[in-house]
Image (cartoon, rainbow over all chains, first blue to last red; front, side, top):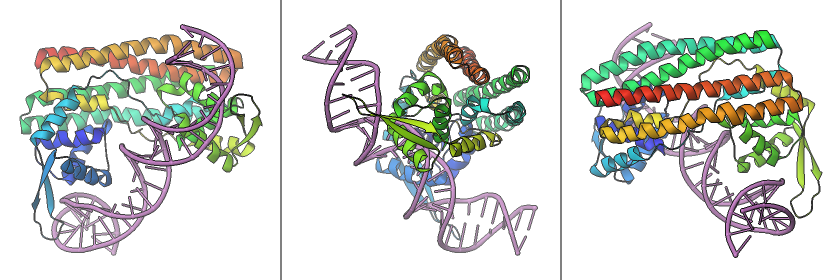
Length: 183
Length: 183
DNA sequence: AACGGCATGTAACCCGTTACATGATTAT
DNA sequence: ATAATCATGTAACGGGTTACATGCCGTT
């Protein structure tokens, strides 16, 4: 469902191919939405069948021809409607890490601590990714495309990611202390 | 994949039915893992085929007979192995709300603010749910089952949820300010 | 009279991942 | 030599949701 609108959103910024879409998703929405090419290509076909995008073929040599998609009026309208859907729901989260910890009472103290320390490392690294790579990518694209308004939203979403990872790190440090003291 | 281990984990605490499992998940793991009954029943069958759980039928009148599952030795071993899997990965998050905001630059200021305010309300309520209902449920179950060790882990996971929602609220307040000022 | 709780399950469908297939060019 | 990048796609499978089916009991 949402993938359709993610693809629409990018194509609205500029006409592009399925391959391009994958790259832009990796650069920007990666931490709250991704998709594999195997899912992107059929979804683009669906969007075209629905009349929300149109394709133009750019011939190439040695590679498959490029299929460049452009958003239609109907597509813009559909996107607008989706964007206005009231955000009155809680996303259903699936966090296998928390599930493991929830049932980890049967493990010995040292094993639990090893698990928590590993996660701590992963999330500390992730804080940096948000503060450097992603921040730079957003600034560059904002400058390049001059989408000032959109840039504000992109940066806000990035800040969510940074805040999320920081809170994760803080919680892990707390969890390590508690397990050390109480188990 | 992970659902199998969630079910195993609960059945290890005490023998129970598919219907019970659904209820306990709603009370406890709901905010990082859930499943519908339509998924739980077939998964229990798979677990039984694998020899990780065994069932016993308790006849009833006026309702379908209860099928009470108990964990086996093989099941305990399988759970233990899963719990020890190194947590060296980032969970792949799908957050439709962030996706919407990412592309919301095309909306007018007031519509974006309305969206953010709605989310703010949802997450403020959610902070309270974690601080009251969920906290009480965990304390009650910990006292009742005397699973002291597990209780520590349950409480830690609950604290994650509370921290997550608080950080969400803080971010939304920040986002509202930024949109008011910069758009 | 209608709804929610108890208790099991099946069927159809959608979403997403992994693997496979092709094949030239460029970088290591 | 090997791997990565470019560029398209299909097929098989697994995970998850929604809808449907049955039927009693107690509450509103």
